[in-house]
Image (cartoon, rainbow, N blue to C red; front, side, top):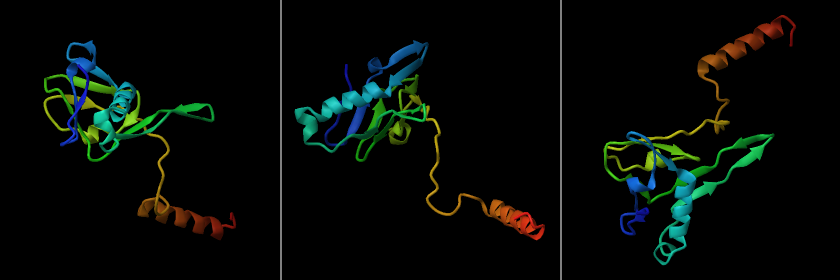
Length: 146
């Protein structure tokens, strides 16, 4: 059974059978495979007339370091895993799936990794850090170190 998307409510339903059993009640969900399923649906007759489901940024190698792909589920879509008492680890991308969940008994675990954080305003310092830096610069200038 494959995922289904309700064209009226925009709920993406993921059956437990689409997940990979790790052991006991722990499953994995390959988010890149999920993204490819979403793309396939978007290319179908039903999906072509609907809003785009997600934004995808592929893996990028920068300075010998490979940054993970990013998948962002966009409005108006939400995600529901088939209800039951099991846990799902999201693998294969950084994503916002946990933010788009319709909650039920399923425990969904996101494994997003942090990268460089962009500060969009100010210096990124707290007021206390700013004050300490200014004090250190004043002392350095007074001592003739600057």
